[in-house]
Length: 326
Ligand code: XMP
Image 1 (cartoon, rainbow, N blue to C red):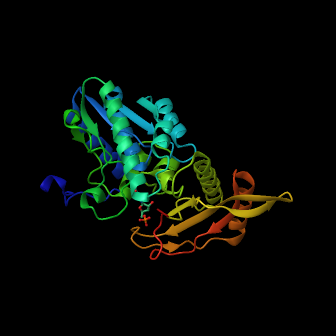
Image 2 (spheres, rainbow, N blue to C red):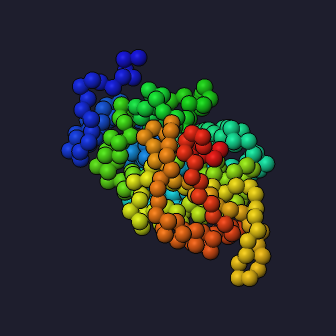
Image 3 (cartoon, rainbow, N blue to C red):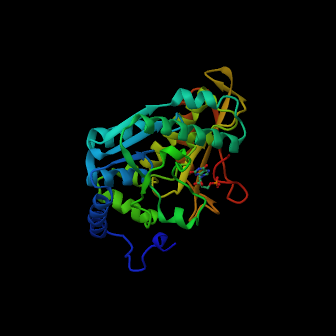
């Protein structure tokens, strides 16, 4: 479809000045499309939905309602950052939905990876639908669709597909980033004043930490994933690796091994570290990292994360291992 092709004349947005020109153009286009009406956006806090939110806040202010669903599978500090940036700093209309118990209850005993994804995706649509029904007079749904999503050229699908809303809740779509590549979205996000930690973050799957808590999710093991991931990110940032290594995270499998702490025998989980570089996520190579830094991370994870007595480093490229473990 012609309207889904990036115009050939469109210059690649690589500088703040080009981003500023794109923003001006979009503000006018958004105001023309939306007029005085109301818009709804599912704001995950990922790069794409955050940039759409910032753009719409600038264009139409309180006519936008952002819904942030905390499904309990987000990284440490993420829901707090969404509230801080969008509600406190940008003064957005932000509905924060604490759906942690709801998601985790639905996931009890669900161990098969694709089934986990289905449960998370379906529950997300249900929660979002309930929030949408509470709001009056919404006519538009904003989405962080970007050009690779349209081209379907990559396996990375960074945002939730809310296309599953029922018939009576169909809105006109607002997709201001649909002709942008990821690097351009980041430049635009920075020009809109979003923090680097939001704009230059690594890819994060829709089902979140859920696919890194291997097998059936339990709350204690999920916390071990969240806490070890936070330590890994902190240490990578300290060592100047944030934004340099393509994706890095931790996984907690559902088996235990013996260990020893303060002279006492333990029987606890291992944490697996995965850190890879790739261009398109179709193949990936293991990032070569400083052994001293890794030893320090092992020390921190084994001493600071409850229920963990061992750390493993996954040295498998893709293929044969996928980037995620599920
Ligand atoms: P794999 O594990 O297939 O991952 O090598 C390739 C890239 O895709 C991400 N990924 C997902 N993203 N929903 C997403 O939005 C998912 O269900 C999903 N599964 C994997 C993964 O993090 C990596 O960047």
